[in-house]
Amino acid sequence: MDEVDDGCGSAFKFTLPAGRHDRKGEPRAMNQSPQVLLVDDNPADVGLAREALAVGRHKSCISNVPDGEEAMAFLHRAGQYANAVRPDLVILDLKLPKKDGRAVLVEAKGDAELRAIPIVVFSTSRSMLDIACSYKLGANCYVSKPGNLNEYFAVMQSIEEFWFGSASLTREEK
Figure 1 (cartoon, one colour):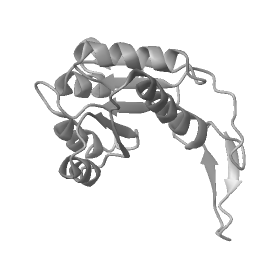
Figure 2: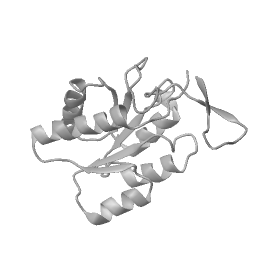
Figure 3: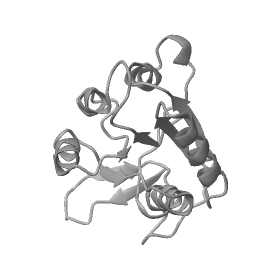
Figure 4: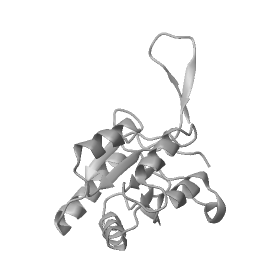
């Protein structure tokens, strides 16, 4: 970690956690692959997402859960997920069994330990009501699932590239 002056003339310094960028957007080599939690109950979509991200530049490590209850257990590292790695990004479908994506957004964004994890809603819905509601509940991004294979791959890879190539994210320290 580096101590950095805040540049505002204050008398304190703060410490930046090891991250993805050294200075002015230059990528820094990461010790491990980015961790993605994919919350989707459709096995075909899960397979496509895994394929798309496997060939992406960042080689994200994908964990998948099929419903909102398991998503929250994973994020809270409860039960069978006690040893789960904290994800760097959550890709969340809205229409899920047991607990839907909206409820996951409310719970995750309402939790001080989880709210910094970016959540991308990735849904077949193009409804303005769903989009507006997702942002109101704290989604960091809303992306509609494309209808064809090539677009699906391109969209998944663009999500990965933005969050792990351009955005500055915090990482849990080991």
